[in-house]
Image (tube, rainbow, N blue to C red; front, top):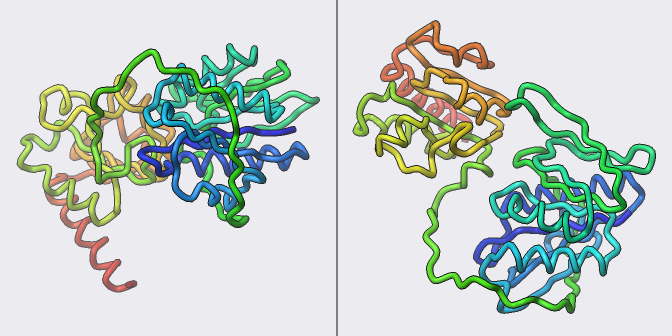
Length: 322
């Protein structure tokens, strides 16, 4: 079985999610006795390094019309590449772009599709079985795809990619690239931080911060942890923090290795977007805050005392241990 993995890039550089998808694709292919083919669309530096994460072959379609993301164009090229490579499985990261591609590629290949897969898929009785979170992360469903081709997207932080191979040569793939029907005039993108869907550590705060001027203690903690900052919906709606930091059912769903909630009560809508985090730490002065029921670790106390002390403790530990 050939597993084709779309390795997503941004401004010519691979996203962290691309390495995760390629690594999981290689694990899936190995278990099925097949090989993993990484697909790169557009210009990308060092595409051959995908071989480090298990890709047996790296193919690239480098065309000026792929310089800006257009889901209709990308979907057609990915489907064409899957046919040419004889792929039985097509994988992509469960990013905003990946989600916009999943259904289109599945329709073009007449394939069953599962999004947000959260572990390495298995082949059972000749069919791919993939697991995904359901009921806002409260349960897991095993989905068996019985079509000849399966299309799946991989949830972020599913499995830490390991460099098990080495750089390999990149093969140019000659495919027809249709002209886009839309024209991108300008792109506004937040830079300098790890995007929330890719972040391994997230420090989030809510209305307990009281005033925007108090957010410095949250940012200091995030800096010491190398974390991305986030916020609850009321904070984003009030304009105290930018909209791209809003996590929850109505915002961005995340699944970091560590999620720290500061001054957040834990409404069910927020929990639905963060309860797939591997470790949840809650800091709140209200011992009855609902968030404590979902926490792995909880600190009952005044956040304006607890957070600076936590930041200092982390700083001291880092200084002592280099």
